[in-house]
Length: 97
Image (tube, rainbow, N blue to C red; front, side, top):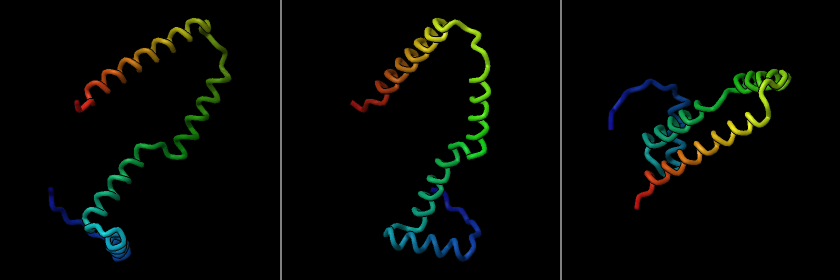
């Protein structure tokens, strides 16, 4: 474990201490868990990004279809098969037995 020093405002320190006391955990663990949770949330789309992507999808859905339905269906089948095979390979490697 690495020891680091950060400057925090008084209100933040009070929150950390209060949470640690309520949860019966060390303050350092409360901070580590909070940072891990925050990090996980940063992988999600922001509201602005989500709206921009929905706008792109709306524009794409208005464009005329340029490929035959059978061609699209075949490509989707191929992608699903590839994902399924990849998932099976991962599950075999993750199996602790």
